[in-house]
Length: 171
Image 1 (tube, rainbow, N blue to C red):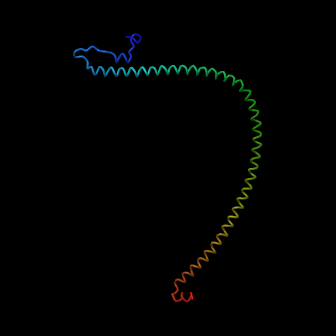
Image 2: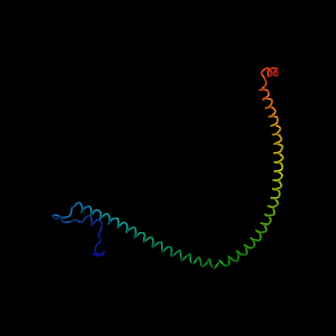
Image 3: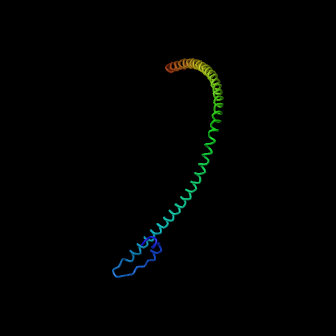
């Protein structure tokens, strides 16, 4: 049987009846097989319907893309015609902008160099001030360290003196 003369549907499989004969096939196995075949046919039909729909959508999308391509080609030709005029004008404008940018860059560099000099002077002045501060702070710490050493020596002498001497010194 060819595809054109015989179309099997899931309903056909489910409705198919077999004659019962002695020593025939197990009816439960036949029914189980019919059910599996019907389910597979259902799945295949759904799949085919989905594929048919996808093909239809793809064909429509292809048609749309071809129309867009035609429109884009027309736009591209028009753009290419305008390109050379716009490019020449852009080159002229770029040259003017470049000259102005170079001039502005030179002014910015000159100002930056002046500011750098001032910042360096301030930095050197700050370093001199910091150096002087550190030296005076070190001298202050040395004086305090000497006073602390004197106090510690006095305390050590006081702790080693006999109790009577301490009592007399307190009175």
